[in-house]
Length: 439
Image (tube, rainbow, N blue to C red; front, side, top):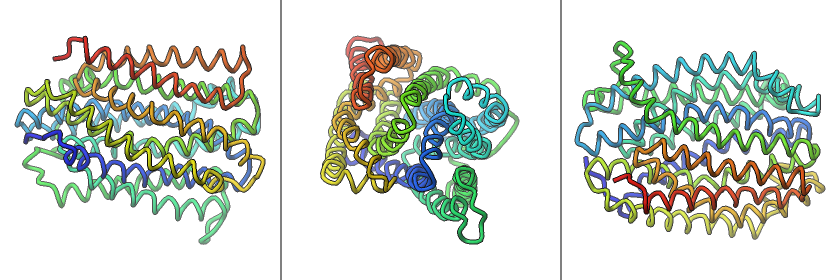
């Protein structure tokens, strides 16, 4: 099946992912908002533990991105029947990997956190959160594998529905388990972790059942679950490993950022957690258009239409920019209303406002840079994209270290590190697409 790169086609693929990410980020917003009303320690701990968990989640996302690239290319080549074996083996691999990582999170991660977190109270709460949150990794990895299938064939609406179900279940369980409503015991930060893990399990069951009953499995040779084919896993790893490394580096750098901010004080860390949540919401359209760009780039190359990739990227950047403009205007007009979703503490609200203005400014640069970078990933030259990520992360980490330790700048200036990252990764990606050998 050939796919075009018209505005309509880009939007058709992107908007269900955007809606799905909105629903998924309701989980992040709900956890942060509810824990902000439990206590500043819980809010700060969820920042450290949440980003730490996200590193492991992104390993699975990196592998599923590689799977998505291969599957989309097979579709572009007119070989949909070959897609299923890649998805099935991706599920095998990610299910096994998740079990290993759950063990590491439960028994190794506390030692890592104890060396980097100054506050004993924050450390204990972060440890408590991870002890329950880690089980959700198994289900999130399965969800990523199935989502890779739907994104690769351009049918992304079901992803939205699964995330909406996840969000609804999470809100109900969060309200019950964190505060002790609906007959639950009040579990605080542990309740937030348990609720998120159960919600991901429910989404997994839904995706499996929908796929079995609504998708023509024979067309894609999907869910055969034959013997593990290590040659296919190796093929996927060849594409995915650089992506996995780059996302680990990306989120690892963000974890390093929060570890440094924690040394500035509990208030600064709580503010940064609120900003992290808002920032992720503003990133939602970017992820949607980045996924569409990634998939359509792979598909165009599969069709032999490499010369159309630049037009695709330009259109994706324009569409995403227009949507982000709307979101940014809202954030600028009602900043206090948005921050109050997370906290009623007026001191925390006033400290968060200037950082929110900084992020509103930065998001435009992030938007263009991330979509262009995903164009590079979509070319299947994932080793190159890994080196681009390493380059950008190196500059980012140097900037953060200097401005925290050497200059001791304000939190607002430190958050400008996101702009430094955007300019680094965006410029490097443009240079490669213009002058590199990817066609």
